[in-house]
Image (cartoon, rainbow, N blue to C red):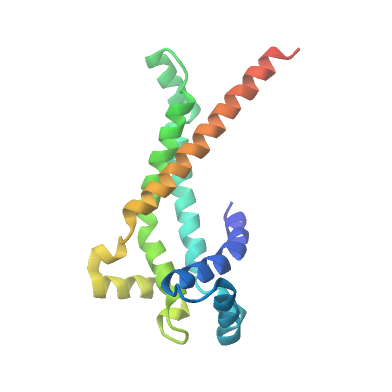
Length: 185
């Protein structure tokens, strides 16, 4: 899975760099920002923050996957079915996905803040080099814990919603396919 995340970030990071710079410089057009990055920083400028993005994605995936595996493992589901008299419903799986995603989002917010600082740093600055720990330390020194967790609530909300929809839809589709399989000869 780590390799899939690394490959996905090959596409995601350049678009994120351009998007974030467009957000802080609303007067520039997206194509203009893209071309400016290429002319001033080269292709490396488009991949600034790549390592921090991959690190954030891997940790976030491990946390989300670990939590959902605990809650939705066969033994946990068997215990639930025994106590409640029915299997875990799709909406309950969706809630588990929302919780797991939200928790992982909260834990990885400092990495997201560091990634953003690295992507938006002035070319040639020490932050632009891309050292995640150094970027986090700089935020800690200047803004403390609040700075490291800037944007945590909207980030948790967005990722929780994604987990809710993904895991709920996955479980519902799985249930439907299993039911169709039982009905087929």
